[in-house]
Structure formats: C-alpha cells, structure tokens
Length: 180
Image 1 (cartoon, rainbow, N blue to C red):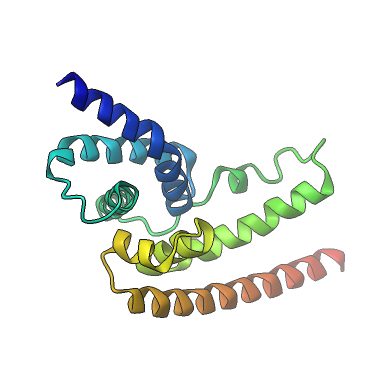
Image 2: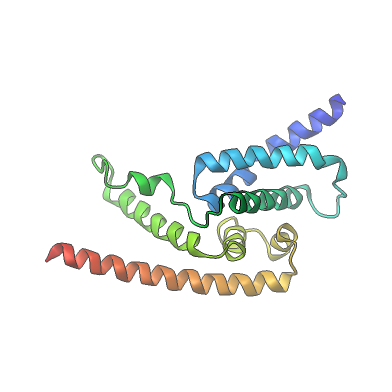
C-alpha cells in the first residue's frame, strides 16, 4: 500500500504542472483550474489500478483532465469564461508599463476568441497550439485519430484567426470613436 501511495505522489508531482496548465488554458480561470486539477488527480488515483499502459502516463492523465473539464462544463453549462485579468482591466492601470498592458490586451483577445470556439476545437488548439503536444499525443489525449486532430486544428485555427481579426477591427472602431 505504501508503494502505491509513493507512486501516486510521484505521478502528482510529475504531472501536476502539465494538468494545471492544460486546465488553465481550457477554463481561463486559475481558481477553476486548481479545482479541476484536484478533481483530475482524484480520478487518476481512483482509476490508477485500471491503467493499462497502452499510452504514456502523461497522455492518460491529460485525457482524464480533458474529461474532467468537459464534465465540469456540462454540469455548469458554461461555454466561455473570462480570465481574472479581463475583470481587473481598467481598475488600476497605474504602474503597469505600456508594453505589459498591450500584452494583457492581446491575451484578452486571444482568450475571448478561444472561449468562443466549441469545446473540441478549443481542446485541440490548447493541446497543439498552446501546450505544443504532438499530433500523436493530442490524438491519444482526445481519443481521436491523428487525421481528425490535424483537420480540427486547421479549422479551429481558421476560426480563431477570423475571430481575432474581427476583434481587432472592433477595437479599432471603438478607439476611433473615443478619439472623436
């Protein structure tokens, strides 16, 4: 029993950051990502005895994180969440260098566009584009064929780019109105 406990603690220490980062990208909320990370590892610990080693431990655990996140969204019926930085924009801009504000604004646009994607597209963009997993790893995590990963990633990126272009155009119009 002690050996199993050591193994589970090692899994937690080894993969905590990967799971948390994935869930943070998925939810856009650090508090939710922390909660879902804990839920993920509870599921990992409960089902570790059934792990068949047909994939790497990492892809197995990330696939559990994916299912945990989807279950969470189904329960709450939420599709898009805004990160804390968006909620705090405009409250206190003193002391923040202009470059950092621009990065925050760009990240806000990316997060907003990402949150508009359907969950499958959001998952593939997070895993392939943001977390830089291989097509094979992404396919294992999502339980898809590699061809579906490639096609959905391509389609998701097109939608994401279109959304970002539209967001930038809207921002320019808003800024022009403020100047007048």
